Length: 431
Ligand SMILES: *Cc1c(COP(=O)(O)O)cnc(C)c1O
Image (cartoon, rainbow, N blue to C red; front, side, top):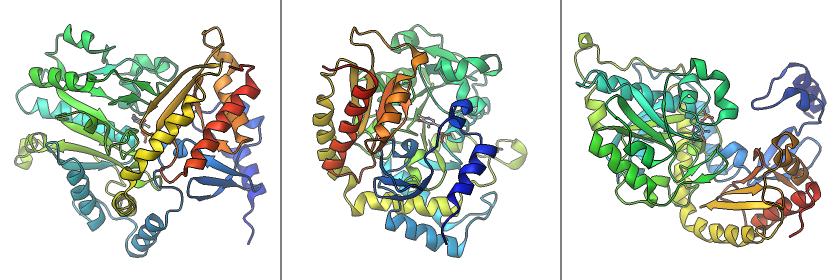
């Protein structure tokens, strides 16, 4: 049977509202309708093939339709798709928790609380932090500190932490108050008495346009938190699972001891939505008591601990070992570095930022000024890159390149070349 793709296109036009998308523009264009994936490639209904240059919005790790992940999903689906995690358990979720804890054996994190995605994983950490202090002698610690340009998700709690004006300002009146800091100097000046936790995306702020933190910042932040008894929440929703070259971004530094670690996106290798909030025995123990003590964490979602998602996540983590993913990534990170170096000389490239296998290519005018944001240069360059077999999305005028780990050296070259050609087509910027 030939899938009715033209009917699907019509249905999309008439009835769908897409995320982070100006629908007026969407309706004026022909969308890419993705029909299948294989390794680092996606194919559309018209037979075009594209390299998945942003790993399907930062979720895919080992490539599309990886046999091991697909098999795990099928096997689990034949057995149990879902049963409530409220008062029941299931093997994939329990075993995944054990596996995740083993990956962070360099920390005191020993407990896993599941949720649906990165945003809800953040919500869990925030609520746990507040409730912990409430019932353990410091009820005044109810506030949070978060950084300029931060992005922690779109639900109201997570977006309260956000520091990207384009996304967050409109809702500011309804956000809970957050102590906004630009760096450690601000923190040093801060009265921390009412602060429950500081939240940070370690090493690199993704949605800010792949903005890199100065080296050593995380260690100093962790010292600040320890000395003041403030929790440290690490949002590794984007940086987790090898993206930065280590399994987790915090592992680039010695001795970082988070109180919460939030994971999602790559957790299932790009198969299914799943969030996990890891925390310590200290936090966990702070919720124990008799029922009537009212120390229960009253929080959960219908699909918490979903067996399908957890089974795929387990297979996803096994692939790191069976394919020596991190070991093989070392070379690919170097290839990416060499390829990106060739872009620096283009007049329209203001900066090239790389952290592990993550890259952000910031475009601007040859005189060093940014483009007028209304021109949507980044978006036009990404549209043009499609003609050169690369799919990706910009963050304003920063072109994101975050390939699945299964790409070959040649495919890395193809991706960077596509960006170069597309940039040259959209803006006259010969170097
Ligand atoms: C994507 C992202 C989130 C939100 O995750 P969702 O799964 O989209 O809700 C949170 N934090 C960071 C750093 C992210 O990149």
